[in-house]
Image (cartoon, rainbow, N blue to C red; front, side):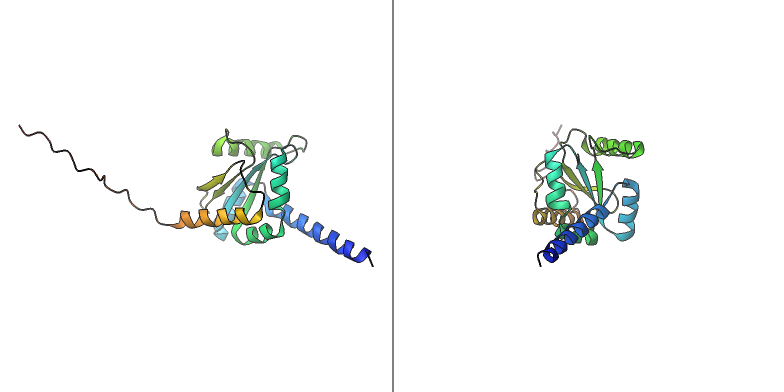
Length: 168
């Protein structure tokens, strides 16, 4: 009798793990193309997956959770920009990730997430203070998207009257 619940739990964990792995892409250019085609946002997730505690917690407590996976499948293209110490990476992937780090803020601590629109333009970012919960991250993404979709108002004229030119 005990074996069945344990087997169901193990199956659920494996499915969640597989879905989380399928969610994150590593090819930035392909992700931008997919985002344009599907009219989705891109979430760049800058992490150090095997050597930074905050990155590992973010992956464990947010990225791999069913609630985030379900939300991301509908709304996002997730790109994992990883800087591992132990795990081997392809040289081209290492170079791409370094270029992305330079492009989006080399002096910013990891973990960091950057939200891009379908055109690849930055909408918002969160740095090391990323909440390790699904709901606050989704709320932040939705708020950033909503704000980015609002039309930009033209600059308002100065409230100060123009200084009259001296009369001669």
